[in-house]
Image (cartoon, rainbow over all chains, first blue to last red; front, side, top):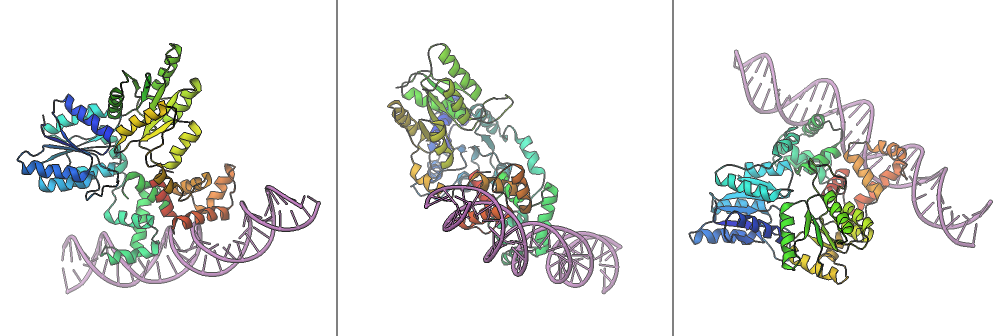
Length: 221
Length: 221
DNA sequence: TTTGCTTTTACGGTTTCCCGTAAGAAAAGC
DNA sequence: GCTTTTCTTACGGGAAACCGTAAAAGCAAA
């Protein structure tokens, strides 16, 4: 089993119980940090001292407080940590339930496992660590069901950009100018309308407001 | 200090660490439940056996799973528990940060304390229990700051209904018919427009899409 | 009941959005 | 090189949303 484990988690209670879970697995005195910046510091220190961590367990969202932080959240922490230690295994432990977000963590950040804070999370965390230790990936328990909703429609970058602009109050007729300015193509108003219509048709929506609400729920914007 | 404590919390990890916190306070073997219905059952049993609980620590949101539950969440649990044991002290321990919600818990449900799951929640939980034991109320640490955002704009039921309808794809011009059908007043199209305009003005928005996005973020719809 | 005030509703003009069609541009195939 | 296909853009008519104004309805106090 892993020996050098680093926990990045701002909630004191969660941090305590994760440590207890590790204790149950026979992992002695894991390092823990309440801030992402501190966590990255420990990663660096581990390398410098020739005793690098072999697993990082991190939350996603960290509350901001008086201590100003360079790294705002778990996703950025993973990226920064992997940059200086590419072989570091990472396990995300978070309440996040949006498929798009979790999917992105696996595909973009290359995390090794995800455990959702939920009813049997302590047991699942143990299982996840064992799987990751064997070199496997650990997906959340209800990942397949969750994936269904997502696969309803594959949103392109353009799609998300357009909906984001709408959600920010940009008039539809002004979107082409914005797209052109950022060298995004296609940029014509008709193309914007076409994309919106296509999305609405597939999802059986009739109004842009529904798209905004849907994308918010899915965590895409 | 309290002797008979009941914990209602669905997340295994949180439950474990709350128990550990109570242990630190010298509270021996608190009762804990993963479902609201179970928690209420224990409250009943406590009364029946002449050994009622003197503190209920509960989360607010409980995940639904295969086990069908009568009581869906912490607020309802508190209400049900107080109905059969009015003197029961209640402490809510939740990640909820919306002032409107927490405010309602104190005013409507009459809870004795609120601790937000956050950076120093273990310490705060201890402090809260001591205060409640002395007969005081315990408010969240950053309650004043939190109150600021609340004062941004008070959304009425009508406001939320209108935005929900928009987010569901109802045409603005069809909203009056819906409101009239549900005996909601005012219901005129001009009144709908007026409310939307007022909300947008206060929040400095220009489009309905922004309102939908904002309310999604705030968890109002 | 009348008066004065507030809230709600009705209406009309302007802007934006929606949607179909067709022209134009780019890519693919021969 | 030329055609075919696909994608992108331009345009125009009609629907919906936006915005200001004025009439109507509620409501409180005299």
